[in-house]
Length: 131
Image (cartoon, rainbow, N blue to C red; front, side, top):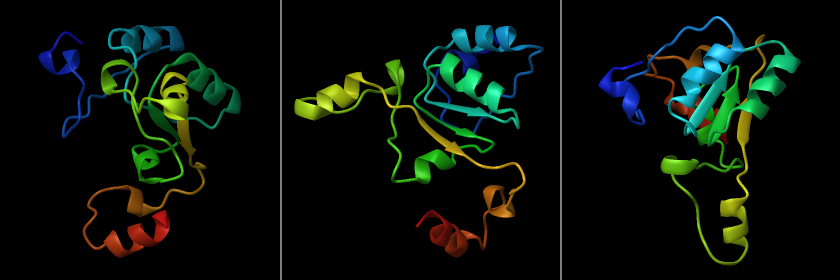
């Protein structure tokens, strides 16, 4: 956790994987860099899903998926804190200061290979799926 890459927002191609033993330990890890742009939780438990989504402040996220929330044009995309704030004036000011938490949920029984690299040859199917 003390490496330079963990001190700034990571936009890729690095994906750190950190282990934890319980939710409190995970919250302490997240608390070292609060307000992440994205948050992904993988669980079959609706109670754990709700607990995670309600206890972590983040820009957008997914349940049982990763990164695909930004492809859904029906969900707002943006961050919190240093990850960015939205528009100002009129209703946009209200929306900017009333953060909407976008979450895309994928069932665990449906796990198509299109979600995973390599993505070569999957572009046509991908465009069809997100429409």
